[in-house]
Length: 356
Image (cartoon, rainbow, N blue to C red; front, side, top):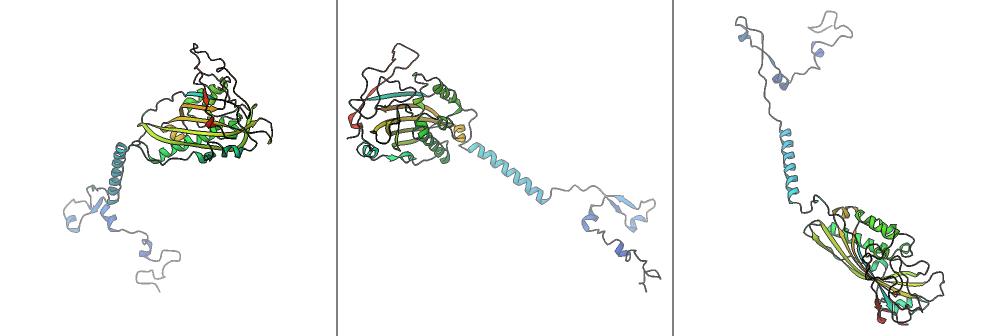
């Protein structure tokens, strides 16, 4: 039997199960009714003549929802904060960077006053020399305590110091650089504005105070000398300072002591010490810090024992154990030539030599 509203034969098979079931999926909640633009008149209103059954409701001017208002407020606050920080930030990038200056270099050979002392044991020489307390390799180039400056953060100052140290290590301690086999480990750290000067120095070395390979790095004549001990002794200092709002400068002053012997002479040959003091001035703009490159603006080098008569522009030509300096001044020095810098030479003090 069907219900009171069902057909006598019951609900047909496959048909919806009653009037309510047919419209069960349609839900008219309160928000739906309020949003309707057409509204039916009440029964009392429809009693008037010629009154239509429905009327059109005025459009509701709905304001922003609470979530939208909060979102707009957060965006406004973030935008204001960004503007404020941009104005107050002391580390903002300047509009333009200064072009890199060319490197100014001076290489001064130090001539011994007698025979160069030597023994077969490099360790003995080091122990009986002023380098006895020097550290070995990169350990002799410690980083100083760094502090932020007016326009550079702590991390930027550390980057400048570590990049300068990396340059010093590669240009003074790498065996492949010291023997003249490679220059790339040093070149990759040079500011792009100085690469032309760097390349010209090695392609066409000139003693003009601008284009001497020995101003960029330490390297010995491979046909003359080789390392007898790779434990190079080092001592020196690093310091950083801000020169202006867009530039950091690092000053390095280190002494390197190398144990050398004649090329191909074997382990039984006498070994002598060779000393190089390098005072380097690096400059860093913000691009250099980002790329971890450096502008080398001043290179002041003293090296010996060397003969003042030898040209130290392209390679250093060390005087080895038992050798003495040739008499006479530097070869080819012409004080009237404006194209070349006048070569300088100094005397290597006996106290700088090992006691053997």
